[in-house]
Length: 381
Image 1 (cartoon, rainbow, N blue to C red):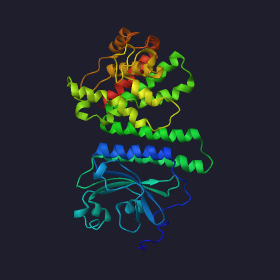
Image 2: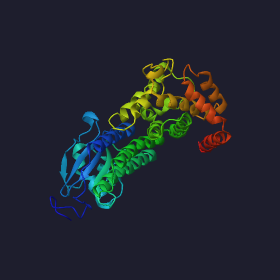
Image 3: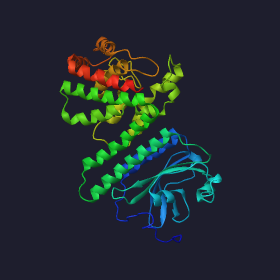
């Protein structure tokens, strides 16, 4: 056993020459721990960073007084923390109740009331340790498969950011690749939504494809394509905060329930607001339910006050939503969806965008490909 306070570099696979995490990734990881604590409903979600003699709280969820861990707080290695086992084994650890587990009933986290723990290692590309991603609770609990899957998805996306920093240190990295790491972090939120609502995840993927195809049909400059596709692929990410029983309920929603649904563009915009993209992704998410005549939400924007990319996305969103199956209704079909955007041409929806969409579906091959995607997804629902 290594003595407490000594150097644990070899024990925990630490490399002190690794680069510092920049502020952009720090903010993105803060979003991750905040979302984890909210979605899984635990008082504490943490990113921990290991050093040769200590382990530090690098990011901690903003959970109020229920979370006893403060950013920057450090504990000596060798204290018997949950995270030390994760670092030593480089494998996940689940402790459902440390009080009844003789391996953990003297763990220092018990002094903070944290008897439940689930953590995974965060590794640099060469296998050395950055730290851990973990959640803790003051009560015994079982962790659902979807929650474990969510944590592992976010683990991989945090590690993608570490990979970018690692490659940058090796002089093989560029600013574009760092942006790609940030994009990967945001796309992790899409995967998080998929854990709770696979219908919305499939919807976003198909909407992104159609949005990009319409943009190409319109002749939109190719430099806008990546941002448009990315924004469309996460346009409903705000639904991660909408309760599943409201999101997938059959029948008519009450007025308060519909107001909760309508909040998702603003919530989604908040999720990405601190990510410095070279494209107007926050506005794209915020405006995708605005309508040309000012009847949309959340702000009732009209005409050219609505971003062109959002006008494209809104048409693709309607076509996909109506033509595919949902838990609360059967698919209405592609023809019915196209009739809706056709009837709203120049009133609710940008005329040029509608024309481009209709022209796209006049191509039999694209129509066949679209129907095949819808059918393939619905076979497994």
